[in-house]
Every structure is written in C-alpha cells, then in structure tokens.
Amino acid sequence: MENKINSNEKKKLGVAELACYGIGNCIGSGIFVSMGSGIGFTGYSITLALAAANLVVLFAYAYKTLMAGMFVLPGGTYSQAALLQPPLLVGVTALSTIFTGLAFAMYAISVVEYAATVFPGIADYGRLIAFAIITVFFLTTLLGGRFMGKFNLIMVAVLIVSLLVYILTGLPRVDYAAVGFHEGYFSDGAVGFIMAIAMMAFACQGATMPVAMTADTRDPKRSLPKAILIASGVITIVYCLIAIVSVGVLPIEEVAGKNLGVVAREIFPYPVFVIFIMGGACFAIATSLYGAIASVQHPLLATIEDGWLPAVLGTKTKKGYPWVMMLILYVIAVVPVWIDMGLNELISLMMIPTMIINLFNNALMFKLIKKYPKAWENGFFRMPKWFFNITIILAILCDLLISAALLTTLKSGDQYFILIMVAGLFAYSHYRLKAGKINLQDIERIRREAEEAAGASGGK
Image (cartoon, rainbow, N blue to C red; front, side, top):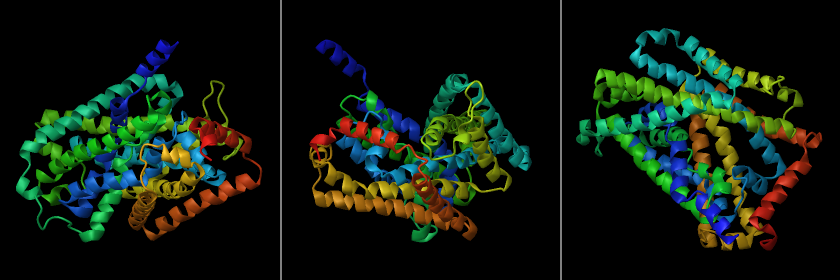
C-alpha cells in the first residue's frame, strides 16, 4: 500500500513542471498585443517597465501565492475563493466572468493588425475580418473541445518557437548604445512609465496559474509558491529580452504604438517574416482567442447554476450546447469591433474589474491569517507579522496602481461606464442574495470542503 502511495506521489507535478505551466500560460498573446502600447507610453524604458510590471502583478495576486503556501486546496483557485471571500464577493467574481467577451474582441482586432503587416490591403476591411474571426471561432465551439484541441497544441508550440527566433535573431541586430540608459528613457515622464507598467500588466498575468493544478501537485504548500516565483522570474527575463529587441533595432518613433511585426520585418528575411507573423503572432493570438472562448463556458454555467444569473441563460440545445449564454458572449465580443474600440480601452475594461476584485481578496488576507493562525505559522512563507502587513499593503497598492492608471486611459464616458459596471456587479450580486436566488448551501458546502482540505479545524 505504501509503495502505491509513493508511486502516485511520483506521478504528481513537481516545481519544474508547475513553473513551466505558469510560464506557458503567461508568455503568449499578451506580449504581442500590448508591447507597442507600452513603448508608446515610455519609449526605451519599456524594458524597465516590463520588469516592474512583472513584480507589480506578482504583488497584485499576492493572496493566491500566500494561500498556496498555507493550505492544500484540491479545488485550486475555486477553493481559495470559497475559503477567502464572503458570499457577496463570490457573486461579484462569478459575474465578472461574463466580461471575458471583451477579450475576444481584442484578440480578433490584434490578429487583423498583425496580418495587415503581411497583407496591407486587408486593413481597409479590418472590422469585417475581425467580426468574421470571432464568428468562426464561436462556431467551432459547437463542435466541442476535442475538435480544436490538437490544433491548439500545435499553435502553442509554434508560438514559443517564434518568440525564441525573434529574440535570437534580433539580439545581434540591437544597437546597444540606443537601448542603454539615456535621455530617451521615460519619454513621457513618471506618469508615462506608470502607464506602461499598468498596460504591460495585462501581458504579465499567468504566473499564478499553477494554483489551479493543486490536486495534481506533489507537496503543494512548498511546490506551488516556488513554481510561481520561478515562473515570474523566467517571464521577466524573456519579456525584457523581447523588449530590448523591440526598441533596439529601429528608431523608437517607428515602433511606438506599433506591433512587433514592424521589428520582425526588419530582422527577418521576408519569407521568415511572413511565417513569424502568420504562424507566430497570429497563432499566438488565435490560441488565446480559442482558449478564452472554450474555457469560459464551464465557469459561466456554474455561475448560472448557482443562481447568480437567470436560469434562462443556461438554456441548452438537445446536444447540451448552452446557446443562450454563448450568444450573449458573442454579442459582447462583436460590439467593440463595430464601435471601433481600441486595444488600450479593451485592456483597461478587462483589467480594472479584475484588479478591484484582487484588492478585496488581498485585504481579506488580514482576516484569513487571524482565522487560521496555525496554517500561517506552518506555511511556506512564515514571515514576521509586520512584514506580512507590509506585503499586503503593497499588494493593495499595486491593485490600486493598475486600476487607477488604466482608468486614466479611458475617455470620461468609458470611465463612468467601468465604475458603473463594477458597482452594478456588487449591486446585482447583493440583489440575488437578498432575493434568495442563490444556493447558499452549495457555497457553504464548498467552503466546508475547502476548510477540511486546509485542516482548518486545527487552525481556528
């Protein structure tokens, strides 16, 4: 029996595998989408901004890493939320998933922008093509996940190879005198640098994703925090190398606000450039688009089943396809395309609600360690109380920094919209709770399971 247990433990994921999972989830379409915007805000100091963005994001999601080092929660992020959040915030977090549709629009627009560097003529039909891309990808969900699974894996592999080729080919072409510290740094001052950090934070999310693999992890209280820290460090190095190539080959004014295709055209022979754009950039973004569409179905269905959204939204076809819910997501995705919403605005609209929810989650950590003192004392980080307080305060400030900076990128009308949207999430969540629409027993059951897994009875 003991040999069987040891054998099962050996089959579980260790630090290296978990770190690779976090790196793979982070390095992708985000860097293709947001690099040009970041350069536009801060010029040559984009490398410093990316390093800072990775650190800021690590703090912004501090609660995930700290909880991973305190508890063994097989349910991963879902169990973390059940253990940490009051019912109202559980509802807000669940409801915010519906705005994932904005990401679909951003990815489709980015695919068109990259493809236009190879086929300039399509730029005049950008909205129509982006609309078509979203439509086609939504239609593939009718065929089930297995249809795109293998193709999705191929696209991820091509993405990684493309970025490595971009770095290795570009570094010898870099004018290191230009990328060294000089007056071209901080082109828009401190405000521009902060804006670049906030914008690039979108590309730096993902290092904490190994938490979702808790059930398959060997010694999770130690392995998960180590994997998250390693993944964050590797991502920082890779992104900084991409940034050096992006600002070191061409004059800064030629790359600011543009995508990586501008630099790729300069460093690659034309056939390789075409492969990089169509196979690298477009595949990377298409992978994220498909992954986002496919992965949002189950969380949204759970949100509907738990009562946070009307049951009619979960209406399915005879084959089990949730067509009403997916139709609403489709509308949310295509509207920004037709009203010509920019990438910066879409990133802001997606990131701000997430950072506000993170702010509450980080603040709730003060209460959590008081409730489970033994779990904290026996946890991975075991830091002094004063150091923990500073860490959480910094985490809250990082959430505020990203939210406030991105809010300033929006027009006044969009600013009011995002604030009303967040307030609406809280108000609607409160309404569903008070109206008795929510299965609170299910939430309590999940919480009890999380507490049992955490060994909470001994820590209270």
